[in-house]
Image (cartoon, rainbow, N blue to C red; front, side, top):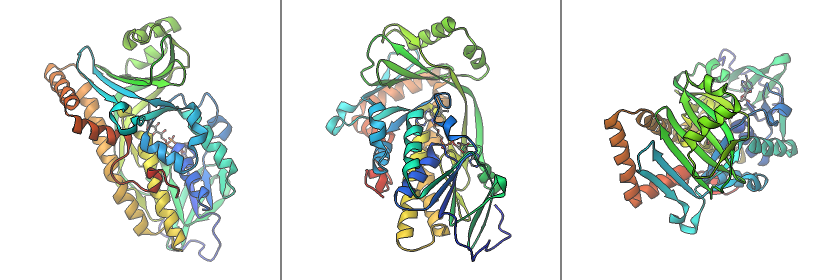
Length: 415
Ligand SMILES: Cc1cc2nc3c(=O)[nH]c(=O)nc-3n(C[C@H](O)[C@H](O)[C@H](O)COP(=O)(O)OP(=O)(O)OC[C@H]3O[C@@H](n4cnc5c(N)ncnc54)[C@H](O)[C@@H]3O)c2cc1C
């Protein structure tokens, strides 16, 4: 970010009202939400959209909290996703070989509302790209890269490769954990890498999963079994980063055997059916969520451990609030790049992200070890939560994203 030019190209008309750096899930969601409400939006990404929509791009599934499903509904995306989303009916959390476990059941909630949904990231991406292509006020510029942003009183100018410039009121950095725009704006971040790798794959099993998600805490980290459509489950296997490469390189039968030991036999024989993916795990919290005419969203603002399946849900809540603030400001005829708006965005979003960073980091530290006093403490903790229905319901509602500061989209209302 360069503040030396107080009013870059002030007399000229804007190319877009909002420029978004990054067509990942967070960036596309913000683009679709805002363009769906009539805003002129340009979304820029260095990756080819055809590759991003392909099978080989992202093997992850996302646990979409119930509150995030409401946001997707408010944006009009849910009907495109619903047929390929598996409702989560129960969550069972178990500690290694201990019989104590925490059990969340949607039957405990009024109306037996699902706790959330498991959706393949490629399904989300495909729905977003399709919708982006239909919106007349959304311009997807890819593969193109934003090289920098010059911001001043009069507006922001995004500099793209190929010497093109885009004038706008506001730039949203949805450019991922390494966020070149966050760094260029001089915004620092608290960050560290976990000595863990997330191994992701899909398995088919003989018996139906009945919508039950399982988080099994093993010494190297959590092993999650997430129900997908059909007799399939997505595995998020957190492993010691030094051991992961050897596991990922195992021949098919040996890899299946390693999986089987951790999976257990409760769904009958299992068979790995997809490629193996791996993701380095990290924590990151940006010191600020905004600079002049720049807002950080999604992993550009915060990266958390996937132990609770909440990273994208945080990004979806960023989008719900920022889109509401932008659209309301525009309806009032005011500047959507205004500092007071961006300050409000930060004030209302940062506590949620900080809380989840602390909780996920603490859980990972508490559970990814075999030290006996810690094992006892966590087992007693799990059992205590299990026996206190009001506390359990509160934790359940928090994980579902249905309490706290909820902008219109997070209540399932349109913008
Ligand atoms: C193993 C694992 C499991 C997970 N499971 C869950 C889960 O169950 N539930 C959940 O809620 N979350 C989950 N997450 C988190 C979730 O996947 C991420 O939070 C989410 O995908 C991040 O999306 P994003 O759009 O913020 O960033 P990204 O997907 O990183 O997108 C950033 C985009 O910016 C683009 N870009 C980079 N530089 C530039 C530039 N200069 N100009 C323009 N564009 C640029 C990149 O090409 C990229 O497309 C999981 C994460 C991991 C690792």
